[in-house]
Image (cartoon, rainbow, N blue to C red; front, side, top):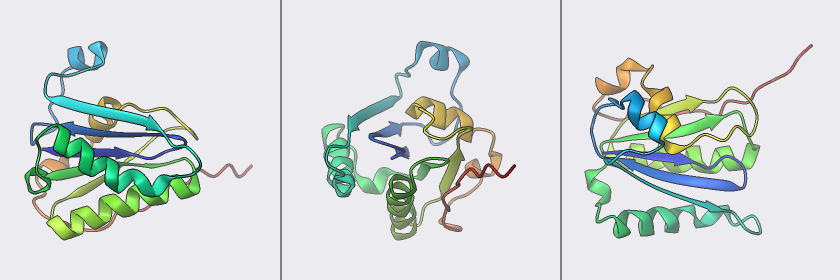
Length: 149
């Protein structure tokens, strides 16, 4: 199972994709959902980004998934809000390290881009090595878009 974390901006999203490989069909993408996927999004109120750990716990419990069943983590790494990105990436890296599972970072194309959980899974398909990884390799780092002209 793949845990997906997106903490960019004021809307945070979590997702679980139930297969261990990134084989998402184009029809799943067009429909905006997959029968193998659970998703939860919420707006962060009063800068309460610290609540994401509680949200992950509640999300997994609601869907009857144990943390030990997670085999990979995909996390949105930017560009986006400095603090929001760091919170999500730190949590993804910590979970990956403690569970000894791979963590993959997924970049967007513009600041504050709204990416759904399914979009993140599809974008991460381009990184073929994730299917070959079986343990935590290296931490994901935030990506900040720079506009030097």
